[in-house]
Image (cartoon, rainbow, N blue to C red):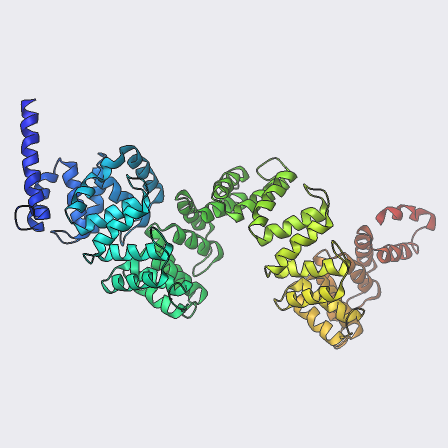
Length: 591
Protein backbone atom coordinates (compact mmCIF):
# COMPACT_ATOMS: atom_id res chain seq x y z
CA UNK A 1 0.00 0.00 0.00
CA UNK A 2 2.82 2.37 0.86
CA UNK A 3 4.45 1.65 -2.51
CA UNK A 4 1.19 2.24 -4.41
CA UNK A 5 0.53 5.50 -2.57
CA UNK A 6 4.03 6.78 -3.24
CA UNK A 7 3.78 5.76 -6.88
CA UNK A 8 0.44 7.52 -7.25
CA UNK A 9 1.80 10.63 -5.58
CA UNK A 10 4.85 10.68 -7.82
CA UNK A 11 2.62 10.10 -10.79
CA UNK A 12 0.46 13.07 -9.88
CA UNK A 13 3.56 15.25 -9.52
CA UNK A 14 4.64 14.33 -13.04
CA UNK A 15 1.12 14.98 -14.29
CA UNK A 16 1.17 18.43 -12.69
CA UNK A 17 4.47 19.17 -14.42
CA UNK A 18 2.99 18.06 -17.74
CA UNK A 19 -0.07 20.24 -17.21
CA UNK A 20 2.12 23.28 -16.57
CA UNK A 21 3.82 22.99 -19.92
CA UNK A 22 0.79 21.72 -21.84
CA UNK A 23 -1.50 24.54 -20.74
CA UNK A 24 1.02 27.16 -19.60
CA UNK A 25 0.03 27.01 -15.94
CA UNK A 26 2.57 28.78 -13.73
CA UNK A 27 5.18 28.69 -16.45
CA UNK A 28 5.66 29.46 -20.10
CA UNK A 29 3.63 27.16 -22.36
CA UNK A 30 5.93 24.56 -23.92
CA UNK A 31 4.04 21.89 -25.82
CA UNK A 32 7.23 20.12 -26.91
CA UNK A 33 8.30 19.73 -23.28
CA UNK A 34 4.80 18.55 -22.38
CA UNK A 35 4.97 15.94 -25.14
CA UNK A 36 8.38 14.72 -23.88
CA UNK A 37 6.92 14.22 -20.41
CA UNK A 38 3.95 12.35 -21.87
CA UNK A 39 6.27 10.13 -23.91
CA UNK A 40 8.15 9.18 -20.77
CA UNK A 41 4.90 8.32 -19.02
CA UNK A 42 3.24 6.56 -21.94
CA UNK A 43 4.93 3.21 -21.43
CA UNK A 44 2.56 1.39 -19.11
CA UNK A 45 0.33 4.43 -18.55
CA UNK A 46 -2.55 4.19 -21.00
CA UNK A 47 -4.09 7.55 -20.12
CA UNK A 48 -0.77 9.21 -20.93
CA UNK A 49 -0.62 7.19 -24.15
CA UNK A 50 -4.07 8.48 -25.10
CA UNK A 51 -3.03 12.11 -24.50
CA UNK A 52 0.19 11.52 -26.42
CA UNK A 53 -1.92 10.11 -29.29
CA UNK A 54 -4.06 13.24 -29.13
CA UNK A 55 -0.87 15.25 -29.62
CA UNK A 56 0.04 13.14 -32.64
CA UNK A 57 -3.46 13.57 -34.11
CA UNK A 58 -3.34 17.36 -34.01
CA UNK A 59 0.41 18.02 -34.11
CA UNK A 60 0.70 19.40 -30.56
CA UNK A 61 4.36 19.59 -29.55
CA UNK A 62 5.25 17.02 -32.18
CA UNK A 63 4.89 16.57 -35.92
CA UNK A 64 1.38 15.51 -36.84
CA UNK A 65 1.14 11.74 -37.39
CA UNK A 66 -2.40 10.43 -37.67
CA UNK A 67 -1.30 6.81 -37.95
CA UNK A 68 0.62 6.95 -34.68
CA UNK A 69 -2.39 8.63 -33.15
CA UNK A 70 -4.63 5.82 -34.35
CA UNK A 71 -2.27 3.17 -32.99
CA UNK A 72 -2.14 4.80 -29.57
CA UNK A 73 -5.91 5.19 -29.48
CA UNK A 74 -6.40 1.52 -30.37
CA UNK A 75 -4.06 0.37 -27.58
CA UNK A 76 -5.54 2.76 -25.00
CA UNK A 77 -9.11 1.94 -26.01
CA UNK A 78 -8.46 -1.70 -25.22
CA UNK A 79 -7.91 -0.51 -21.63
CA UNK A 80 -11.15 1.54 -21.68
CA UNK A 81 -9.44 4.94 -21.62
CA UNK A 82 -12.21 7.46 -22.35
CA UNK A 83 -10.20 9.95 -24.41
CA UNK A 84 -8.88 7.19 -26.66
CA UNK A 85 -12.33 5.66 -27.11
CA UNK A 86 -13.88 9.04 -27.96
CA UNK A 87 -11.28 9.88 -30.59
CA UNK A 88 -11.15 6.38 -32.06
CA UNK A 89 -14.95 6.34 -32.33
CA UNK A 90 -14.76 9.65 -34.22
CA UNK A 91 -12.07 8.38 -36.57
CA UNK A 92 -13.91 5.14 -37.27
CA UNK A 93 -17.14 7.02 -37.91
CA UNK A 94 -15.83 9.82 -40.13
CA UNK A 95 -12.32 8.70 -41.09
CA UNK A 96 -9.37 10.88 -41.87
CA UNK A 97 -6.89 10.60 -44.74
CA UNK A 98 -5.14 7.27 -44.28
CA UNK A 99 -7.44 6.15 -41.47
CA UNK A 100 -10.09 3.60 -42.36
CA UNK A 101 -13.76 4.15 -41.64
CA UNK A 102 -15.48 1.31 -39.80
CA UNK A 103 -18.96 2.22 -38.62
CA UNK A 104 -19.48 -1.17 -37.02
CA UNK A 105 -16.43 -0.67 -34.79
CA UNK A 106 -17.57 2.90 -34.11
CA UNK A 107 -20.91 1.53 -32.92
CA UNK A 108 -19.21 -0.85 -30.49
CA UNK A 109 -17.10 1.99 -29.10
CA UNK A 110 -20.15 4.24 -28.72
CA UNK A 111 -21.92 1.59 -26.65
CA UNK A 112 -18.88 1.33 -24.37
CA UNK A 113 -18.79 5.12 -24.08
CA UNK A 114 -22.45 5.13 -23.06
CA UNK A 115 -21.57 2.77 -20.21
CA UNK A 116 -18.50 4.79 -19.26
CA UNK A 117 -20.49 8.03 -19.11
CA UNK A 118 -19.14 11.53 -18.62
CA UNK A 119 -15.83 10.26 -17.25
CA UNK A 120 -14.98 9.48 -20.89
CA UNK A 121 -14.69 13.21 -21.66
CA UNK A 122 -13.08 14.23 -18.36
CA UNK A 123 -9.71 15.10 -19.91
CA UNK A 124 -11.32 16.91 -22.85
CA UNK A 125 -13.38 19.01 -20.45
CA UNK A 126 -10.30 19.89 -18.42
CA UNK A 127 -8.25 20.76 -21.52
CA UNK A 128 -11.13 22.72 -23.04
CA UNK A 129 -11.61 24.83 -19.92
CA UNK A 130 -7.89 25.55 -19.95
CA UNK A 131 -8.21 26.89 -23.49
CA UNK A 132 -6.88 24.13 -25.75
CA UNK A 133 -8.61 24.70 -29.10
CA UNK A 134 -8.24 21.09 -30.26
CA UNK A 135 -9.86 19.81 -27.09
CA UNK A 136 -12.63 22.39 -27.47
CA UNK A 137 -13.28 21.22 -31.02
CA UNK A 138 -13.33 17.57 -29.92
CA UNK A 139 -15.59 18.29 -26.96
CA UNK A 140 -17.97 20.08 -29.31
CA UNK A 141 -17.93 16.93 -31.42
CA UNK A 142 -18.78 14.81 -28.37
CA UNK A 143 -21.87 16.90 -27.71
CA UNK A 144 -22.68 16.89 -31.42
CA UNK A 145 -22.52 13.11 -31.86
CA UNK A 146 -23.16 11.95 -28.27
CA UNK A 147 -19.71 10.47 -27.57
CA UNK A 148 -19.72 9.83 -23.81
CA UNK A 149 -22.29 12.59 -23.20
CA UNK A 150 -25.89 13.23 -24.22
CA UNK A 151 -26.34 15.07 -27.50
CA UNK A 152 -26.57 18.79 -26.76
CA UNK A 153 -26.61 21.17 -29.70
CA UNK A 154 -26.15 24.28 -27.53
CA UNK A 155 -23.00 22.97 -25.84
CA UNK A 156 -21.70 21.68 -29.19
CA UNK A 157 -22.06 25.16 -30.68
CA UNK A 158 -20.49 26.78 -27.60
CA UNK A 159 -17.36 24.64 -27.74
CA UNK A 160 -17.06 24.80 -31.53
CA UNK A 161 -17.33 28.59 -31.28
CA UNK A 162 -14.61 28.84 -28.61
CA UNK A 163 -12.31 26.70 -30.72
CA UNK A 164 -13.16 28.62 -33.89
CA UNK A 165 -12.36 31.87 -32.10
CA UNK A 166 -8.80 30.53 -31.88
CA UNK A 167 -8.84 29.93 -35.67
CA UNK A 168 -9.08 26.17 -35.43
CA UNK A 169 -10.01 25.18 -39.02
CA UNK A 170 -11.76 21.94 -38.04
CA UNK A 171 -13.98 23.83 -35.60
CA UNK A 172 -14.73 26.54 -38.16
CA UNK A 173 -15.74 23.82 -40.62
CA UNK A 174 -17.90 22.11 -37.97
CA UNK A 175 -19.65 25.41 -37.28
CA UNK A 176 -20.31 25.73 -41.00
CA UNK A 177 -22.00 22.33 -40.93
CA UNK A 178 -24.17 23.42 -37.98
CA UNK A 179 -25.35 26.51 -39.86
CA UNK A 180 -25.99 24.47 -43.00
CA UNK A 181 -28.10 21.88 -41.19
CA UNK A 182 -29.58 24.07 -38.46
CA UNK A 183 -27.93 22.17 -35.62
CA UNK A 184 -28.09 24.36 -32.52
CA UNK A 185 -28.57 27.47 -34.66
CA UNK A 186 -31.04 28.70 -37.26
CA UNK A 187 -30.28 27.50 -40.78
CA UNK A 188 -28.07 30.05 -42.52
CA UNK A 189 -26.59 28.68 -45.73
CA UNK A 190 -24.77 31.92 -46.53
CA UNK A 191 -23.06 31.85 -43.12
CA UNK A 192 -22.21 28.19 -43.68
CA UNK A 193 -20.49 29.01 -46.97
CA UNK A 194 -18.52 31.83 -45.32
CA UNK A 195 -17.28 29.47 -42.61
CA UNK A 196 -16.47 26.69 -45.07
CA UNK A 197 -14.48 29.09 -47.23
CA UNK A 198 -12.56 30.37 -44.21
CA UNK A 199 -11.69 26.82 -43.12
CA UNK A 200 -10.89 25.82 -46.71
CA UNK A 201 -8.36 28.65 -47.01
CA UNK A 202 -6.69 27.16 -43.94
CA UNK A 203 -6.47 23.80 -45.72
CA UNK A 204 -9.24 21.87 -43.98
CA UNK A 205 -10.18 18.97 -46.32
CA UNK A 206 -13.63 18.50 -44.79
CA UNK A 207 -14.54 22.14 -45.47
CA UNK A 208 -13.21 21.82 -49.01
CA UNK A 209 -15.35 18.73 -49.57
CA UNK A 210 -18.40 20.44 -48.09
CA UNK A 211 -17.95 23.39 -50.44
CA UNK A 212 -18.14 20.90 -53.28
CA UNK A 213 -21.34 19.48 -51.82
CA UNK A 214 -22.87 22.95 -51.48
CA UNK A 215 -22.09 23.79 -55.10
CA UNK A 216 -23.52 20.46 -56.23
CA UNK A 217 -26.76 20.92 -54.28
CA UNK A 218 -27.04 24.70 -54.61
CA UNK A 219 -26.89 25.36 -50.87
CA UNK A 220 -25.83 28.92 -50.07
CA UNK A 221 -24.50 29.30 -53.60
CA UNK A 222 -25.83 28.90 -57.12
CA UNK A 223 -25.74 25.29 -58.24
CA UNK A 224 -22.58 24.79 -60.28
CA UNK A 225 -21.27 21.30 -61.04
CA UNK A 226 -18.00 22.54 -62.52
CA UNK A 227 -17.28 24.42 -59.31
CA UNK A 228 -18.38 21.39 -57.27
CA UNK A 229 -16.04 19.20 -59.29
CA UNK A 230 -13.09 21.54 -58.59
CA UNK A 231 -13.70 21.46 -54.83
CA UNK A 232 -14.18 17.69 -54.82
CA UNK A 233 -10.99 17.22 -56.80
CA UNK A 234 -9.02 19.39 -54.36
CA UNK A 235 -10.29 17.45 -51.35
CA UNK A 236 -9.82 14.11 -53.12
CA UNK A 237 -6.18 14.98 -53.78
CA UNK A 238 -5.89 15.41 -50.00
CA UNK A 239 -7.06 11.79 -49.70
CA UNK A 240 -10.49 12.65 -48.32
CA UNK A 241 -12.65 9.52 -48.86
CA UNK A 242 -15.95 11.43 -49.07
CA UNK A 243 -14.53 13.64 -51.81
CA UNK A 244 -13.01 10.69 -53.67
CA UNK A 245 -16.41 9.04 -53.78
CA UNK A 246 -18.18 12.22 -54.94
CA UNK A 247 -15.50 12.86 -57.55
CA UNK A 248 -15.93 9.30 -58.77
CA UNK A 249 -19.64 9.95 -59.21
CA UNK A 250 -18.87 13.11 -61.20
CA UNK A 251 -16.73 11.07 -63.57
CA UNK A 252 -19.31 8.28 -63.76
CA UNK A 253 -22.16 10.62 -64.70
CA UNK A 254 -20.18 13.33 -66.49
CA UNK A 255 -21.09 16.02 -63.96
CA UNK A 256 -18.85 19.06 -64.32
CA UNK A 257 -16.34 16.98 -66.25
CA UNK A 258 -16.22 14.68 -69.26
CA UNK A 259 -17.48 11.21 -68.40
CA UNK A 260 -14.64 8.80 -67.61
CA UNK A 261 -15.70 5.44 -66.19
CA UNK A 262 -12.13 4.26 -65.61
CA UNK A 263 -11.42 7.27 -63.39
CA UNK A 264 -14.74 6.80 -61.63
CA UNK A 265 -13.81 3.21 -60.80
CA UNK A 266 -10.34 4.19 -59.56
CA UNK A 267 -11.73 6.91 -57.28
CA UNK A 268 -14.43 4.65 -55.87
CA UNK A 269 -11.75 2.09 -55.13
CA UNK A 270 -9.51 4.60 -53.33
CA UNK A 271 -12.40 5.73 -51.18
CA UNK A 272 -13.66 2.19 -50.59
CA UNK A 273 -10.24 1.04 -49.41
CA UNK A 274 -10.45 3.76 -46.76
CA UNK A 275 -13.67 2.15 -45.55
CA UNK A 276 -16.24 4.66 -46.80
CA UNK A 277 -19.40 2.53 -47.15
CA UNK A 278 -21.00 4.54 -49.97
CA UNK A 279 -17.85 4.12 -52.04
CA UNK A 280 -17.74 0.42 -51.17
CA UNK A 281 -21.30 0.08 -52.45
CA UNK A 282 -20.50 2.09 -55.59
CA UNK A 283 -17.42 -0.04 -56.22
CA UNK A 284 -19.53 -3.16 -55.81
CA UNK A 285 -21.97 -1.81 -58.39
CA UNK A 286 -19.08 -1.17 -60.78
CA UNK A 287 -18.01 -4.80 -60.47
CA UNK A 288 -21.62 -5.93 -60.83
CA UNK A 289 -22.31 -3.99 -64.02
CA UNK A 290 -18.85 -3.57 -65.53
CA UNK A 291 -18.42 0.17 -64.98
CA UNK A 292 -14.74 0.99 -65.54
CA UNK A 293 -13.74 -2.62 -64.99
CA UNK A 294 -14.63 -6.17 -66.00
CA UNK A 295 -17.73 -7.66 -64.44
CA UNK A 296 -16.84 -9.67 -61.36
CA UNK A 297 -19.78 -10.85 -59.27
CA UNK A 298 -17.52 -12.29 -56.57
CA UNK A 299 -15.81 -8.94 -55.98
CA UNK A 300 -19.15 -7.18 -56.21
CA UNK A 301 -20.53 -9.43 -53.49
CA UNK A 302 -17.51 -8.85 -51.22
CA UNK A 303 -17.70 -5.06 -51.48
CA UNK A 304 -21.45 -5.02 -50.93
CA UNK A 305 -20.85 -7.11 -47.83
CA UNK A 306 -18.22 -4.68 -46.49
CA UNK A 307 -20.66 -1.79 -46.85
CA UNK A 308 -23.62 -3.79 -45.58
CA UNK A 309 -21.97 -4.74 -42.28
CA UNK A 310 -21.32 -1.03 -41.76
CA UNK A 311 -25.06 -0.51 -41.89
CA UNK A 312 -25.52 1.06 -45.34
CA UNK A 313 -29.08 0.14 -46.27
CA UNK A 314 -28.46 0.35 -50.01
CA UNK A 315 -25.66 -2.21 -49.73
CA UNK A 316 -27.74 -4.40 -47.43
CA UNK A 317 -30.48 -4.52 -50.05
CA UNK A 318 -28.04 -5.23 -52.87
CA UNK A 319 -26.32 -7.91 -50.81
CA UNK A 320 -29.73 -9.51 -50.38
CA UNK A 321 -30.17 -9.33 -54.15
CA UNK A 322 -26.83 -11.13 -54.60
CA UNK A 323 -28.02 -13.94 -52.33
CA UNK A 324 -31.42 -14.11 -54.02
CA UNK A 325 -29.98 -14.30 -57.54
CA UNK A 326 -26.77 -16.18 -56.71
CA UNK A 327 -24.48 -13.37 -57.87
CA UNK A 328 -20.96 -14.00 -56.57
CA UNK A 329 -22.28 -16.28 -53.84
CA UNK A 330 -24.30 -19.47 -53.59
CA UNK A 331 -27.98 -18.71 -54.05
CA UNK A 332 -29.80 -18.54 -50.72
CA UNK A 333 -33.16 -16.76 -50.68
CA UNK A 334 -33.54 -17.14 -46.92
CA UNK A 335 -30.35 -15.17 -46.28
CA UNK A 336 -31.54 -12.67 -48.88
CA UNK A 337 -34.65 -12.10 -46.78
CA UNK A 338 -32.49 -11.40 -43.70
CA UNK A 339 -30.61 -8.64 -45.53
CA UNK A 340 -33.77 -7.23 -47.09
CA UNK A 341 -35.29 -7.00 -43.60
CA UNK A 342 -32.20 -5.20 -42.25
CA UNK A 343 -32.43 -2.68 -45.06
CA UNK A 344 -36.18 -2.33 -44.54
CA UNK A 345 -35.56 -1.52 -40.86
CA UNK A 346 -33.80 1.59 -42.19
CA UNK A 347 -36.83 2.36 -44.37
CA UNK A 348 -35.09 1.44 -47.62
CA UNK A 349 -37.79 1.47 -50.31
CA UNK A 350 -35.93 -0.99 -52.53
CA UNK A 351 -35.97 -3.44 -49.64
CA UNK A 352 -39.71 -2.97 -49.14
CA UNK A 353 -40.26 -3.70 -52.82
CA UNK A 354 -37.98 -6.75 -52.84
CA UNK A 355 -39.67 -8.15 -49.72
CA UNK A 356 -43.03 -7.65 -51.41
CA UNK A 357 -41.85 -9.56 -54.46
CA UNK A 358 -40.50 -12.39 -52.27
CA UNK A 359 -43.80 -12.70 -50.40
CA UNK A 360 -45.76 -12.54 -53.65
CA UNK A 361 -43.73 -15.36 -55.20
CA UNK A 362 -42.88 -17.36 -52.07
CA UNK A 363 -39.15 -16.86 -52.54
CA UNK A 364 -37.27 -17.34 -49.25
CA UNK A 365 -40.53 -17.04 -47.31
CA UNK A 366 -43.93 -18.69 -47.38
CA UNK A 367 -46.07 -17.21 -50.12
CA UNK A 368 -48.26 -14.49 -48.65
CA UNK A 369 -49.89 -12.15 -51.15
CA UNK A 370 -51.45 -9.98 -48.43
CA UNK A 371 -48.04 -9.37 -46.89
CA UNK A 372 -46.70 -8.63 -50.37
CA UNK A 373 -49.35 -5.96 -50.85
CA UNK A 374 -48.54 -4.49 -47.42
CA UNK A 375 -44.90 -4.00 -48.43
CA UNK A 376 -45.87 -2.65 -51.85
CA UNK A 377 -48.12 -0.13 -50.08
CA UNK A 378 -45.30 1.04 -47.78
CA UNK A 379 -42.95 1.63 -50.71
CA UNK A 380 -45.72 3.13 -52.85
CA UNK A 381 -46.54 5.60 -50.06
CA UNK A 382 -42.99 6.87 -50.51
CA UNK A 383 -43.63 7.36 -54.24
CA UNK A 384 -41.45 4.40 -55.23
CA UNK A 385 -42.45 3.86 -58.84
CA UNK A 386 -41.89 0.07 -59.16
CA UNK A 387 -44.12 -0.49 -56.12
CA UNK A 388 -46.80 1.85 -57.45
CA UNK A 389 -46.84 -0.16 -60.69
CA UNK A 390 -46.87 -3.50 -58.84
CA UNK A 391 -49.65 -2.30 -56.55
CA UNK A 392 -51.63 -1.23 -59.59
CA UNK A 393 -51.40 -4.74 -61.03
CA UNK A 394 -52.29 -6.29 -57.66
CA UNK A 395 -55.52 -4.28 -57.69
CA UNK A 396 -56.09 -5.14 -61.34
CA UNK A 397 -55.54 -8.89 -60.94
CA UNK A 398 -56.82 -9.27 -57.37
CA UNK A 399 -53.46 -10.33 -55.93
CA UNK A 400 -53.57 -10.04 -52.13
CA UNK A 401 -56.47 -7.59 -52.36
CA UNK A 402 -59.91 -7.63 -53.98
CA UNK A 403 -59.84 -6.49 -57.59
CA UNK A 404 -60.33 -2.72 -57.71
CA UNK A 405 -60.10 -1.01 -61.11
CA UNK A 406 -60.23 2.49 -59.61
CA UNK A 407 -57.28 1.91 -57.26
CA UNK A 408 -55.39 0.14 -60.03
CA UNK A 409 -55.85 3.20 -62.23
CA UNK A 410 -54.93 5.69 -59.47
CA UNK A 411 -51.67 3.92 -58.59
CA UNK A 412 -50.66 3.67 -62.24
CA UNK A 413 -51.46 7.35 -62.71
CA UNK A 414 -49.22 8.27 -59.74
CA UNK A 415 -46.38 6.27 -61.27
CA UNK A 416 -46.93 7.88 -64.67
CA UNK A 417 -46.83 11.36 -63.17
CA UNK A 418 -43.47 10.46 -61.61
CA UNK A 419 -42.16 10.29 -65.19
CA UNK A 420 -41.90 6.53 -65.59
CA UNK A 421 -42.29 5.65 -69.26
CA UNK A 422 -43.60 2.13 -68.59
CA UNK A 423 -46.31 3.49 -66.29
CA UNK A 424 -47.14 6.19 -68.83
CA UNK A 425 -47.71 3.53 -71.47
CA UNK A 426 -49.86 1.49 -69.08
CA UNK A 427 -51.88 4.55 -68.11
CA UNK A 428 -52.49 5.26 -71.79
CA UNK A 429 -53.75 1.71 -72.22
CA UNK A 430 -56.05 2.12 -69.19
CA UNK A 431 -57.55 5.19 -70.87
CA UNK A 432 -57.78 3.33 -74.18
CA UNK A 433 -59.71 0.40 -72.71
CA UNK A 434 -61.56 2.47 -70.09
CA UNK A 435 -60.19 0.47 -67.19
CA UNK A 436 -60.72 2.14 -63.80
CA UNK A 437 -61.67 5.35 -65.56
CA UNK A 438 -63.84 6.61 -68.37
CA UNK A 439 -62.58 5.66 -71.80
CA UNK A 440 -60.73 8.69 -73.17
CA UNK A 441 -58.75 8.27 -76.37
CA UNK A 442 -57.42 11.83 -76.25
CA UNK A 443 -55.81 11.07 -72.87
CA UNK A 444 -54.62 7.70 -74.15
CA UNK A 445 -52.90 9.29 -77.14
CA UNK A 446 -51.42 12.03 -74.94
CA UNK A 447 -49.81 9.52 -72.56
CA UNK A 448 -48.63 7.24 -75.39
CA UNK A 449 -46.87 10.25 -76.91
CA UNK A 450 -45.28 11.19 -73.58
CA UNK A 451 -44.00 7.64 -73.20
CA UNK A 452 -42.78 7.55 -76.81
CA UNK A 453 -40.67 10.65 -76.12
CA UNK A 454 -38.72 8.43 -73.69
CA UNK A 455 -38.33 5.73 -76.36
CA UNK A 456 -40.58 3.24 -74.59
CA UNK A 457 -40.98 0.32 -77.03
CA UNK A 458 -44.48 -0.61 -75.82
CA UNK A 459 -45.75 2.93 -76.35
CA UNK A 460 -44.03 3.15 -79.73
CA UNK A 461 -45.84 0.05 -80.89
CA UNK A 462 -49.19 1.02 -79.35
CA UNK A 463 -49.12 4.52 -80.82
CA UNK A 464 -47.99 3.04 -84.12
CA UNK A 465 -51.07 0.81 -84.14
CA UNK A 466 -53.32 3.82 -83.60
CA UNK A 467 -51.69 5.68 -86.50
CA UNK A 468 -51.90 2.53 -88.62
CA UNK A 469 -55.63 1.98 -88.04
CA UNK A 470 -56.59 5.67 -88.02
CA UNK A 471 -59.69 5.09 -85.91
CA UNK A 472 -58.98 7.56 -83.09
CA UNK A 473 -56.27 9.65 -84.70
CA UNK A 474 -55.61 10.76 -88.27
CA UNK A 475 -54.26 7.78 -90.18
CA UNK A 476 -50.55 8.08 -90.83
CA UNK A 477 -49.10 4.74 -91.82
CA UNK A 478 -45.72 6.23 -92.65
CA UNK A 479 -45.41 7.43 -89.05
CA UNK A 480 -46.80 4.09 -87.85
CA UNK A 481 -44.09 2.13 -89.67
CA UNK A 482 -41.36 4.39 -88.24
CA UNK A 483 -42.71 3.74 -84.75
CA UNK A 484 -42.83 -0.02 -85.42
CA UNK A 485 -39.19 0.10 -86.56
CA UNK A 486 -38.13 2.03 -83.43
CA UNK A 487 -40.01 -0.42 -81.23
CA UNK A 488 -38.62 -3.47 -83.03
CA UNK A 489 -35.06 -2.19 -82.56
CA UNK A 490 -35.71 -2.58 -78.84
CA UNK A 491 -36.98 -6.14 -79.29
CA UNK A 492 -40.72 -5.59 -78.94
CA UNK A 493 -42.58 -8.76 -80.11
CA UNK A 494 -45.73 -7.06 -81.36
CA UNK A 495 -43.66 -4.57 -83.36
CA UNK A 496 -41.81 -7.46 -85.02
CA UNK A 497 -45.15 -8.92 -86.07
CA UNK A 498 -46.45 -5.58 -87.35
CA UNK A 499 -43.26 -4.98 -89.33
CA UNK A 500 -43.60 -8.44 -90.82
CA UNK A 501 -47.02 -7.48 -92.14
CA UNK A 502 -45.72 -4.15 -93.49
CA UNK A 503 -42.93 -5.92 -95.42
CA UNK A 504 -45.36 -8.57 -96.63
CA UNK A 505 -47.74 -5.95 -98.05
CA UNK A 506 -45.18 -3.24 -98.88
CA UNK A 507 -46.70 -0.62 -96.58
CA UNK A 508 -44.29 2.37 -96.57
CA UNK A 509 -41.41 -0.08 -96.96
CA UNK A 510 -40.36 -1.94 -100.08
CA UNK A 511 -42.23 -5.24 -100.29
CA UNK A 512 -39.85 -7.95 -99.13
CA UNK A 513 -41.20 -11.40 -98.25
CA UNK A 514 -37.91 -12.58 -96.81
CA UNK A 515 -37.91 -9.65 -94.38
CA UNK A 516 -41.55 -10.35 -93.61
CA UNK A 517 -40.64 -13.94 -92.73
CA UNK A 518 -37.65 -12.68 -90.69
CA UNK A 519 -39.81 -10.43 -88.51
CA UNK A 520 -42.63 -12.96 -88.13
CA UNK A 521 -40.06 -15.51 -86.98
CA UNK A 522 -38.49 -13.07 -84.49
CA UNK A 523 -41.93 -12.34 -83.06
CA UNK A 524 -42.78 -16.03 -82.81
CA UNK A 525 -39.46 -16.80 -81.10
CA UNK A 526 -40.43 -14.38 -78.32
CA UNK A 527 -43.66 -16.32 -77.80
CA UNK A 528 -45.94 -13.68 -79.30
CA UNK A 529 -49.04 -15.76 -80.04
CA UNK A 530 -50.36 -13.83 -83.06
CA UNK A 531 -47.04 -14.36 -84.84
CA UNK A 532 -47.50 -18.14 -84.74
CA UNK A 533 -50.35 -17.86 -87.24
CA UNK A 534 -48.34 -15.59 -89.55
CA UNK A 535 -45.25 -17.79 -89.41
CA UNK A 536 -47.36 -20.88 -90.02
CA UNK A 537 -48.86 -19.15 -93.05
CA UNK A 538 -45.35 -18.38 -94.36
CA UNK A 539 -44.38 -22.04 -94.16
CA UNK A 540 -47.72 -23.07 -95.67
CA UNK A 541 -47.35 -21.00 -98.84
CA UNK A 542 -43.56 -20.49 -98.95
CA UNK A 543 -43.66 -16.77 -98.14
CA UNK A 544 -40.03 -15.71 -97.75
CA UNK A 545 -39.03 -19.31 -97.03
CA UNK A 546 -39.29 -22.79 -98.46
CA UNK A 547 -42.75 -24.29 -98.16
CA UNK A 548 -42.91 -26.76 -95.25
CA UNK A 549 -46.33 -28.10 -94.25
CA UNK A 550 -44.98 -29.88 -91.17
CA UNK A 551 -43.55 -26.63 -89.82
CA UNK A 552 -46.69 -24.74 -90.71
CA UNK A 553 -48.72 -27.24 -88.66
CA UNK A 554 -46.40 -26.77 -85.68
CA UNK A 555 -46.94 -23.01 -85.66
CA UNK A 556 -50.67 -23.23 -86.35
CA UNK A 557 -50.93 -25.64 -83.41
CA UNK A 558 -49.06 -23.19 -81.16
CA UNK A 559 -51.33 -20.38 -82.24
CA UNK A 560 -54.48 -22.44 -81.70
CA UNK A 561 -53.21 -23.51 -78.27
CA UNK A 562 -53.11 -19.83 -77.26
CA UNK A 563 -56.61 -19.19 -78.58
CA UNK A 564 -55.98 -17.90 -82.10
CA UNK A 565 -59.11 -19.04 -83.99
CA UNK A 566 -57.47 -18.36 -87.36
CA UNK A 567 -54.64 -20.76 -86.53
CA UNK A 568 -57.11 -23.40 -85.38
CA UNK A 569 -59.10 -23.19 -88.60
CA UNK A 570 -55.92 -23.32 -90.71
CA UNK A 571 -54.78 -26.40 -88.86
CA UNK A 572 -58.11 -28.15 -89.32
CA UNK A 573 -58.16 -27.31 -93.02
CA UNK A 574 -54.67 -28.69 -93.63
CA UNK A 575 -55.22 -31.83 -91.61
CA UNK A 576 -58.55 -32.48 -93.31
CA UNK A 577 -56.62 -33.33 -96.43
CA UNK A 578 -54.83 -36.13 -94.52
CA UNK A 579 -57.43 -37.53 -92.09
CA UNK A 580 -61.14 -38.23 -91.94
CA UNK A 581 -63.21 -35.19 -90.94
CA UNK A 582 -64.82 -37.19 -88.09
CA UNK A 583 -61.46 -37.48 -86.30
CA UNK A 584 -61.12 -33.70 -85.93
CA UNK A 585 -63.30 -33.38 -82.85
CA UNK A 586 -60.30 -33.26 -80.53
CA UNK A 587 -59.23 -29.91 -82.00
CA UNK A 588 -61.98 -28.20 -80.05
CA UNK A 589 -59.76 -28.34 -76.99
CA UNK A 590 -57.00 -26.47 -78.76
CA UNK A 591 -58.80 -23.16 -78.39
